[in-house]
Length: 398
Image (cartoon, rainbow, N blue to C red; front, side, top):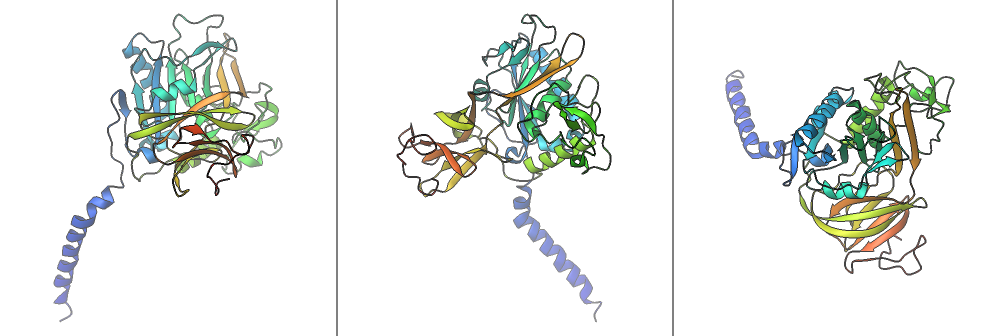
């Protein structure tokens, strides 16, 4: 008698499974990655979709006359990046796009400090909103603009990078680690580390900071002689001589990738946006202007100072963690010796893309509001933290 019920039980389970798939299967699959269509002008290189939970990288062209050359050099950069540990373990977490308009002006300085390329982050940001964009990368064709140095240095600044395409394609992989994980240069050039650089340790004896991996070096020299690095020669020291970051740096990057992305989640849809321009001065961010546009809102991950949209009931309607104002300059001299430098630039300007909703936009540093903007009257709010004495209707925040 017991056995006679077994076929019926199995049949019931199968039927329930079929009905469960019919009613809930689409809801389950909606959380998986699926490509979505960027706005016109944004060309897909590798699109896994799920922009909110991906790391979205956009290449732009400067001083190119041939779009095919632009495509070729950016393909080489993406290929070398994608073959590098640990990025090769997270291929589905990255999206790559191109803006193939060749006549955009990013106000690039080809002689910054005498030998470096630095493009203006605000102009770059305005040009990439048609793509999902976490990290805009300007590829610069240096043909005809080289001056005293054969190898113009590349730079990383305010979440953007300006790359000399005549350099090794791994220059992109090097600069990306500055932007993405706050890595310092591992060449000893005598500078100061005035931020939390995860790849340098001031314990010159045992380098205990690096003990999260079983095997690592402890080599004196990471920006300066007061800090050590975890690998003798890696990508952050000399990308002409090494194609790896080193085991400790790779583990740090894995943690940042997993904190910054996921394999499931909703997509960021293109929508009306506000482009909020900010300026960094005296250790604080100030809202300079707010401009309406159409495009993709910025993803937000990491920690630090942030800009936030506040609704009518003082609720948060979206926030973006601000990029570092540290300017990294990297390259080699005519003899192949690495040339590296890093400094905080007063007056740095950057644009973030926020949803065009809410009543106010604020900038917070720690628990303090350091700047605020009223979206109803389209004017800066005069408030505390050096902005005056009148507080305009943000009681909970201030």
